[in-house]
Image 1 (cartoon, rainbow, N blue to C red):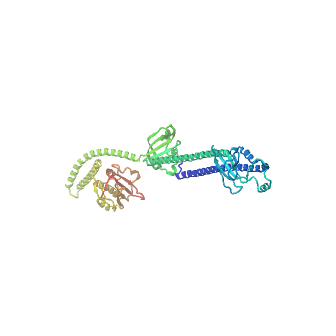
Image 2: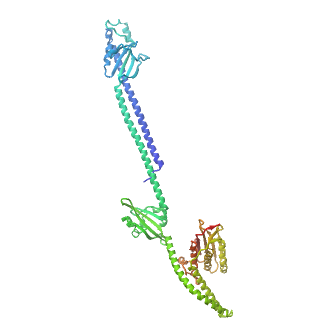
Length: 579
């Protein structure tokens, strides 16, 4: 699902809203103008009908002129006849005095007219819409009554006058009033109102659609944002896991991953997307194939992953299927756990068990050896003192004493190695401690032509450690460095704080021939030595002291960037800095 940005989403919605509003305005204006146009058209129609009737009345009056001259009032007859028309509500003539002289309803003749408009000329017309007592609306037209033009007026005025007969009214200054029924107008108006209501319904429906559209847009945005937040949270959870996590599709192609998985597998982020995981793991051997095919999970299976020919990695593999509530599978989740630390811990436990067994054996053997050694040394010393200095017997006795001392030293080292070391930490100046160790080996180094260099970080404060144990560990490393070089060379001892201030790091580096890579893992084992007169306990004791300080020791031969030499790095992690 593609997440549409909020700004782009609302820009589209606003564009649609603007178009809809313009459409609403257009429909509203069009409806309003249509209503006015229809109303005006209806009024114009009624107006023309009224004028047509008035003109017909005038024409009829002219046509009936002779009858009037003969004494017959034909205008009255015309008023009565026209008043009977279906569209005419009433028709009457009013003389100059305001008296109704002719009316479509004869009973109203002789009454006075209530509406007397002022005219600006003989052709002026006045109109109004009035409501009758019965509720009917009438369009009333008033116009000066001019049935005769000037020529006819002159002709009739020069005549002999009307013939004797019934009295004929004077219409020269009369006004004609015509009331047209507005039934057609009302029907048109009702139709327009119905049209307006329909259009209003359309407008309301359109407005409701716009509101619903905005509700849908907002709901879609909220849903998209919630989905995006859920995805981001899930991605952060997976990225924060200590183990490597991969998800694969049913065909074994990688869909998602975290950086820990890429680091363990040694694959670049640019090449992991949709990578076939079968090129990395054997699906049949690891059980991933059964997980994808039958949904059978693989729990805590150890595998050896070869990142290259020389580098392999112990991994703990867990594979679980991805399936919905209906049981439909869409892939699997692969969790990779780095087992190197656990393997090192297991090796450390095994080594501790071996050392414990050796220690128990050494303690018993050393006890049995030291007792007779003391007696032998005493007798050898007495025998030597009973002979002159230059005699062979005295020389043999001195050699026996030195060799017995050497055996006693080996036994002492063996006993020290076998016993648990009790840590007695105290605030120690590291520079003074290193300087003391250098003073112990300086004579031996000078005799071999070896230069010793000291580089202690001046910012290191007094640290809490067991000075006796650290002195012994550094002395063993320094003696090994001096013994590694026959004549000439250099030894450097450096110290600095571990990043974070949780301990110190001490490095002892020599310029000797180095250590064969094949034996670098064995040099810390008890009794392993490459020197003819070595005991094989020096580095084993160094490791034990480092571990007793909750640290460790590492060897690098040759050091990075150099062709020869050896560097031992002593980590002391459990120390507390003291001002």
